Amino acid sequence: MQKRAYFGLYILIAVLAVLPFVLPNSFYLDLAIRMAINAIIVLGLNLLIGFAGQISLGHAGFLGLGAYASAVLPTHFGWHPVLAMIAGAVATGILAALVARPIFKLKGNYLAMATLGLGIIINIAVRNEAQWTGGPDGMPVPAFGLAGFELSSDKQWYWVVAALLAVSVWASLNLIDSPFGRALRALHGSEVASRVVGVDVVRYKVAIFVMSAVFASLMGSVTAHYVGFVTPNLADFFHSIELVTMVVIGGMASVYGSVIGAVLLTALPQALATFEGWETVAFGAILMICMIFLPKGLVPTLASKFGKAE
Amino acid sequence: MPALLDVSNLSIHFGGVKAVQDVSFSIDAGIVYSVIGPNGAGKTTLFNLITGVYKPTAGEIRLDGESIGGKSPDELARRGVARTFQNLQICMNMSAIENVMVGAHLRLDRNLIKAALRLPGLTRRDAELREEAFELMRFVGLEKYRDARADSMPYGALKRLEIARALAMKPRLIFLDEPAAGLNPKETIEVDHLVRKVADSGITVVLVEHDMKMVMNLSDRILVLDYGKKLAEGTGEEVRRNPDVIAAYLGAHA
Image 1 (cartoon, each protein chain N blue to C red):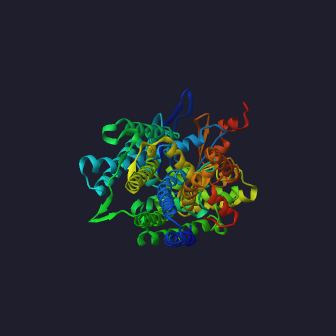
Image 2: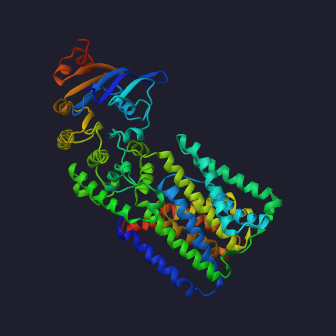
């Protein structure tokens, strides 16, 4: 990966900088914010799935943990939102590590199964603990503020998540082209070869899994504060699948693919709203067509078509 | 002086299959040591035992006097043990040069935070490493693949790429598992020369190979395995004359 890998980042920054001035109304601004939030989650997930080759089917659960930490702790215990957000991320990280360590010691890919179960447990927990979480109806989330400044308008939120997205893309690009990132890709390419050159495979898998879970948790907190309300749907299985689909459609092991995948799949349901009742069918059909004609995902397929390695 | 590698009474059983049984030998530093034997004799299993991929059922392995039996591959890598694989283990999701760079894993700063922030020290070291990796590619004769993706390279080149990756570990001891398997005669001669060059650079070479010309040409000593047991050991000449070896290879009751 050479300098040109960063070229896309400059384009992204330019697009992010211009976007709020060209979007016709607040509906699109809201859509852009949700795209950016999803893109950050998918970047973390793609490091795990695309680069390290480990599948998580429970990432929405981690998202939910972060979101509910930001909802419950300030509401019921009067915590500062920043503290609640950090607490959610730390708790998620510890939980992810506790689950991942024994799983990765097993031979074979059991992570998908374990995370599937974990995601469902988290979802059931937030549905049932109604006295804390409001149950299936969800609960309101207090506004996010720091040092007397409160994030309230969509414009402010947009700039915050846009900056977070640009930094996340930059950090992801850095990471994959580093000793850590190469070890991660190597254990995906050949686990035995990476062990023999000295890669502590379990440690690397745990590290990237925890990192992607913490990413999801932090973005869960951001989502909660931005929307101002959380429901258990945020943490349900279908949302996990949706996140994995964003990775696959955009392109496994592609940083820009993560962004494109998140943007497209966030926009698609809106675009398909005109199909009235058939939108889910259309959604499924588009995914199928994508996988048949672009099996490696949008960005890697197009990149190789135009003779440019990403 | 004690041997660099000393294996005594090494065994591994997979269920009822005794893949390696009570094998003992020792390898002095600086030599080329070959392990030969018919298919299924346990040569690759022996490599897997010594490089930590399998844990022995019984017996002892000592590297420089230190017991290393049952240690994990990354612990062995730290002690300067490198290897290549009979069935290619190249990371096809990476470029050729990155495959070599992975070999230097243990010598690098693997910090996640520093990597994500692209700290200058780390990038500088990475740039140096890239040059170093390219030198190794040149050493094994792959200079024209500098910018190639691994999955676009021919089989013969990938075999040598594995050797370059192992060399990037700066090993004391390198295990080459059939480096010439599947190569044409010209490529085999090139690998023959390459193994010689590796040995001349001061690295102790342990070789599994079916190409007898290459084995006889390169080896200081040879170990012959058959059905997981040690059949003979000695110089090329001694092994060639051993009646047990002749019987095992020709299947004769001569």
